[in-house]
Length: 220
Image (cartoon, rainbow, N blue to C red):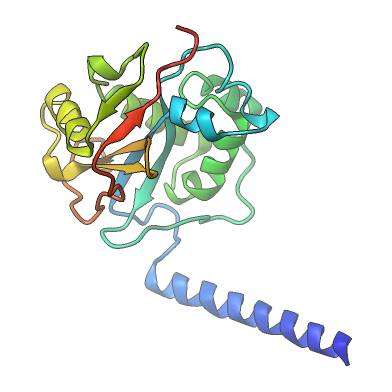
């Protein structure tokens, strides 16, 4: 009896997944290349490393003083976003992974970002990661955040204002930040598909803290 229930539950899950995928295809969701804009997510590495554990993070959280690193470049709809647009994802050449470690210093992160987000771009792996690099090159990190040697205490708005000042043409509605209760975690910047700054006011700030700590870069 128990075995029959398990089989029925499994069959129901398969049917649900099949129907969900069919509905997504009919609506154009999760179809590679069908999206409205990109979000470049820049992670404050010192915050990540203060809470991270495990050998998989030893490259990012070692002696090299990383500050902002690329978390990902995410295709977005004007409302909602696609994910995992090809399952299984096309294989990612290890040479591409190695070439991205200066911006995304964790191989597991690079593989994940390709599977979850790169497959939705409609680009080949090489072209997608070239686009990641171009988007990152288009952003100027404010000088006070390049390699701070002591902890910084900032407000969310101060972080936003610093990026707006350092990046002429970035609209106030084109940037948002993410945090936990005490630390800055990420700055997210919106780009058009041809990598021009753009407004994305629908991408609201997820940070509700009044003040934030930015731990210093390691190895100073």
